[in-house]
Each structure stands twice: as structure tokens, then as C-alpha cells.
Image (cartoon, rainbow, N blue to C red; front, side, top):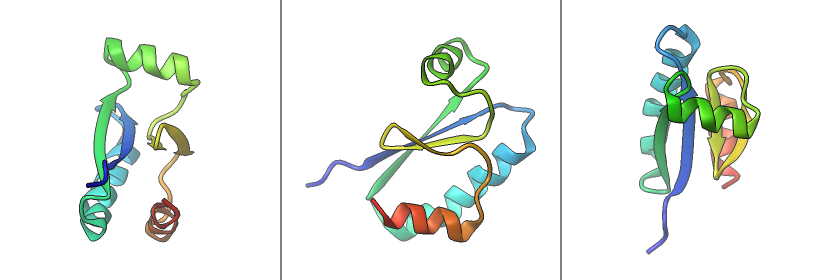
Length: 87
């Protein structure tokens, strides 16, 4: 059995683009079954702040796939699907 590929989204509560990306991920990820596992990290929480500093994340939403930054903004749905297909 394969381990799901981690997807991590850094967000804040006041970010409208974060809500957009979260909805997009919720729409798109079911198409990939159990291939990916989504985790959300609140960038303004203490642990989130430490992780954002270590990784050089300065904007939200930021999306990591397999611990690699792939988007620092909201991609189009097509861009997101195409990126996910490369994993």
C-alpha cells in the first residue's frame, strides 16, 4: 500500500484567497482518491510561524506538495490539476 503524498496549505483566517484555494482542493482532490493527504497549517499560529520562517514562506496561501513549494498564490483549477498529475 502506498503512503499518500502530503499536501500542505498554509493559510490565515482573514485571507479570502486561502478560502478559494481550500474549496478548490476540496473539489479536485477526491478525483485522485487516496493518492494525496491534505493538511492545513495556520500560518499565524506559533507552530505555523516557525514552519513559515524555516521554509521562507512570506505569503498565503502557499501550497506544498511533498514538502516542496509549488504555489504561492491561488492557481487556476487547471494548473492545480496539472501539477497534481505530475506526482
